[in-house]
Length: 352
Image (cartoon, rainbow, N blue to C red; front, side):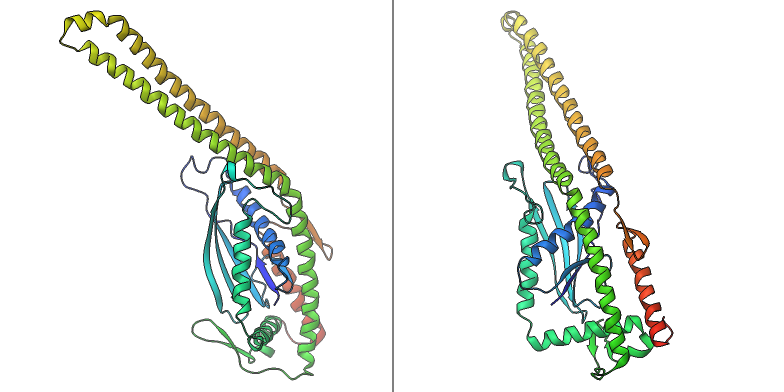
């Protein structure tokens, strides 16, 4: 079965100011393009599926559509929400995938093959294949028929709307099949072949985009992970220094408040040292916290640098320039409308 992976939704950035440092809308947009391409490579290697393509929208006529949303992604942690449907609008499953990779757990990464969160991509791919293997061949045949008729209805609703129907739950059922020699369906198949060529062209550009950002994205995640671990260590060190400083001052005050004059007189120098040392420890802790801020600023700076490296990729389709950004689905919508116009010219039927 052929699978379409819809460009992921970038989701929302963390609301906590510290958690979102170094992250940005631009980076999330890049990830929404990057992740479905890497999932495509992972699924293709299994050999259990047909063509696997990344598409900018739901791609009416897909046999299987995979939809993803980024819930969290910060270089160390990732959480994806995945939904999988077939052409009948039957949901195979909906599942959240979560993984955390620390600095000490970093794996050797390899473009197209091994992302630092490869376990998640493998798990998604395996879950899809596991569901696919449970489907009988007769059921697969029906899914393919419905997928073709959904595309036909999209091209010419007046002609093909009677062949399929949607129930109250939104699932699509086959009502009847066109004859084997239906000329209208033959033209739809010809149009579908052109659409597949455009989708293949789009995937070439997705692949180039993925390759172009691989090094900078991989390095950004590694660097941010190392910086976050550094920040955590600094915070632990700063807290320890502050606690020791406070304890020293409190101890000095306690000695000074002693009712035993001999103790007070004999520990005067010690109390002075304890207060001075405690004050320095607290000061040192705050200085360390300041170093923390410097590290956070380094993350933000790298994030800004990354944004400039992953600017939208321009593509050219039939002489028309398109951008593979959040508006790619709008551009692809114009292509689909062009296909309708082509169908109209070839058949003489009004396109919708």
